[in-house]
Length: 262
Length: 315
Image 1 (tube, one colour):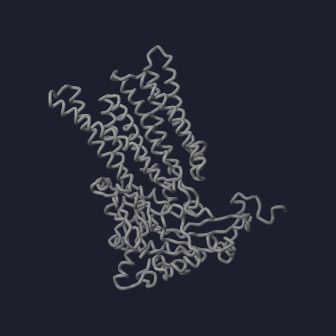
Image 2: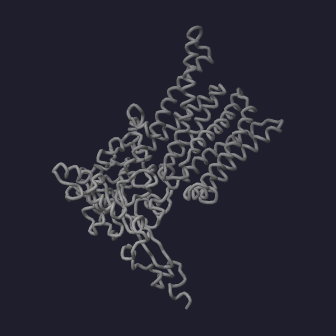
Image 3: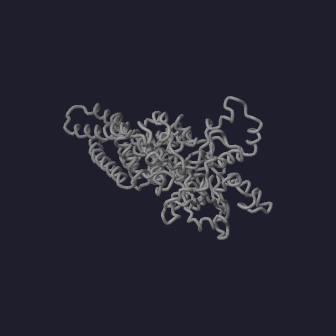
């Protein structure tokens, strides 16, 4: 068994719901984000194409962070989930540097000022800290909501199928861009998606074999190696400077596209 | 402050999308890592060279640089310093894969073996023991010297291996890096040993200078090869090399490493060959410049640690 995730880039609509769900699920400190959304913008003559990449720990099969950790605080479970034992972590940050995906965060004091800096912690925060005691001075990252998976499986639920055994970000995604399941099961939804759409991993050349796969029609999938327009996240989006003269001035562009030669 | 915030908050079009600098080991509290690595090189070089030259005071200073500077600075950097013991075998089995755990082991063995070597050497030099006891002390000193010598080299080099392990930082991800750490450290040690010799007057400074001249030229060539290698290899490694040569770290590179670290000591070293008067003053200038160069080298190397972007290059 190896838990993994498939992220459909064509469906992601940049709502940040997965980021928020993760934050709420784990009572994350104010300046710490486990699941993130990064945007890649291509500006071709004023026509903007934006692709968004939801990123989180890739739970690699051959994780450099685990190999780098000097205390065995980082370890890989039999089900493929890469974990950090905060009680063993010494805060050397070697894993933060060794992770090729930059998905680990060192929790320093200034990253945890409380949800309302300058004020006392709310009851919500205090209760959250009992459930998830984030230790200042240690490293953190996405854990695939391991607590939900373990509790759900103990009740006979199936991760990726039953909501109470599935990561919070997957449950929350309203576009159904995230799919969770067993990568070792060829009949699982994730395996089928990877096969059907030729799923790819980020930076596969590192040989880390991430458990997070991406599918879209742009990379590795379509023979044309280009997304159909309707699948582009930034379809119909135009850079402000191409339609608004004031915006063009603010952004240092001399003219609005189409009016250049007038 | 700004750099930290930008790493935590989503910065579209930049973070993970463009090559970004590593900050954990060079900015804010990360500067302790830089200083620790400098003292690691100075301590390693001085102890090793002094051990070979048989200078007790210099070996003591080299050992103290590791014990009083390198190790404490590394410990202060940790998020949980009191848990440091978890990184030392046998409390961890991570030495099988982790260069940091190996480094902790190397440093611990060196500190212990170095202490025994210093103690035994002191007994021998001052004639505290005699007869069969002296034979025993000499034997222990011999074993401790070999152990300390081997483990100080490993202590000086392991950070190079740890950094070269990072595949996503192409400028570091090369087998040349541990060699740079070793040779630069030995050159630093030679300079410091000359400094010690100026005080104790029991060091053949002329001989050290001739070795230092060769080593400085070798190091200069090594830097050229390292940069050329980075320039040719991959785009991000080239970016880092460019950053060193003409970018934001150029001042540190040209003034700190090239001018102060190599050119000035080398020029003084050649000039002293023809000097008949007291060479102490120019030698002190050369030693100070060389030591500044050691600080600059580690700073530039850590600063040039630039990650490849996370997104696939097909984009």
